Image (cartoon, rainbow, N blue to C red; front, side, top):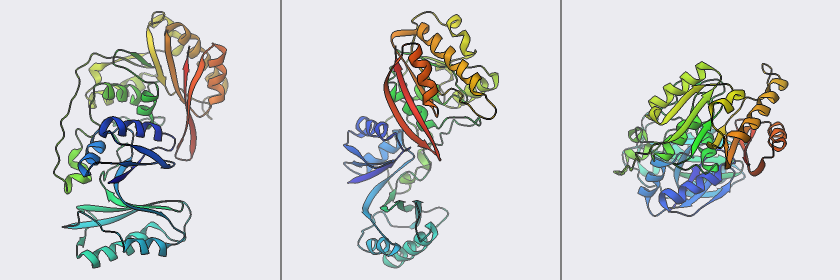
Length: 363
């Protein structure tokens, strides 16, 4: 059996890592943001979705092909055997690119075909099975949606800010930093807390969908149970920000995620880091610092970056690292290199229409 995991473009490496860890399956990037994996059975796919923190959704793959017209897609549908159809279904079409048809055209036509062939009623409000037509450019993937909900919308994310970070990106930064339970992990610009919260959830082995299982689509047609192996570990995670509102938002979200006792919260400006932390006391800094905007002059941002790397040189352990998400890698690298940090990893990603980089530096 094969399945497709959908992730943030550029973070396929992290999804592949998780697939190996959770279900011990081989996987590869087939196109940007899509990872194809081999699975033993449908319960393995359900388990991956239940535990994964790196994906937007996943579906059982029935067929994938290149097409040049709507007719090509419809002709393929007729040859596909669609499983799990029993009580009700719906067709969802997700489409990226320029085409001479829209998603509603595909949903209506494919839905009509399935209704006629399988004699199963369509239910657009609460279907038992969702047939997914996933179109990216001239690539078409047809499958059974096992997730149903958008997995990046964590249930703890209640107090959000205009600059809150995508939870999948926050988790991926932690994995690219190679965090360990014994690490002292610091987020110097925590905003609404996604980075420290995702770090705590990962290190404690708390499944992403522990409280969402009944909302996952596979629960409507599969009877599966998972054994949670939550680890009771003492963690050294610090969430820091110069704005009290941000610190408070982080605390509230962490409490909803049940990891507030695993994170220390502090209001502190980056220029005072060396007064808060001892020399060589922090293992990893993982953060999304402010970047120049209409409301924040570049001169102010550069001064902030300078202070960050100046103090990081002092507080980071000799083998410590600093991982930064930024749309302005030129400015980050300027001050990283000034303070003799070496770039060891760079990942480019796309969020919406914006390009970002995750940069990992070591002393």
